[in-house]
Image 1: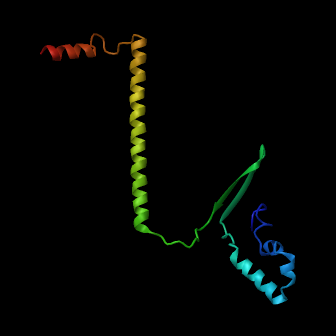
Image 2: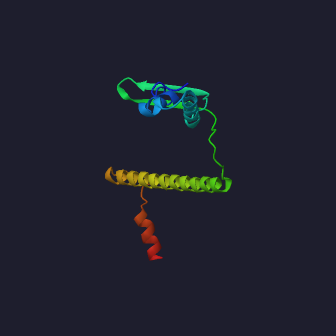
Image 3: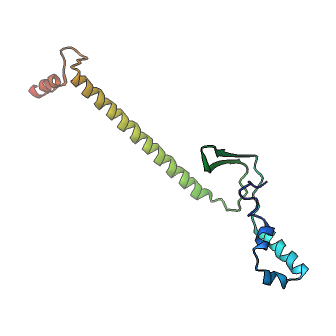
Length: 140
C-alpha cells in the first residue's frame, strides 16, 4: 500500500487525467486502454515491505520519518571486486580515524592531567621529578 502522501500522485489514472483533453477526445477506447496499460507498466510499484512504519512529528507538521524493512529487489549487477575494495577502504579509513581520535583524546587527557597537576601543585612521586632524571643523564 502506498503512503498517503504518494497515493494520489503515483497512479496511471492520475497521469492519464493530466493529458490534454483535445488529444484524449481523439483516442478511441482501445487506444485509451493501451495508454493506461503503458502508464501502469511505466510507473514503478514499490516492493512489499516486511515493516513499514511512518511517523509524523507532532511539533513539526512538515517533517516525518519513514522506516522500511524489506528485501532489495533493485535490478543492479553486484560487483564483488569493487564492493570488496570499497569495504576494505572504508574499514581502513574507519580504523585509522578511530585510532587517530583515540590517540588524540589520550594525549589531550594526559595534557589536561599534567596541567591540572601543575596548577594544583600536586606531586605524585615525592622527591622525584622529570628534571632530576634529565640532570642525571646529562651529567653522566
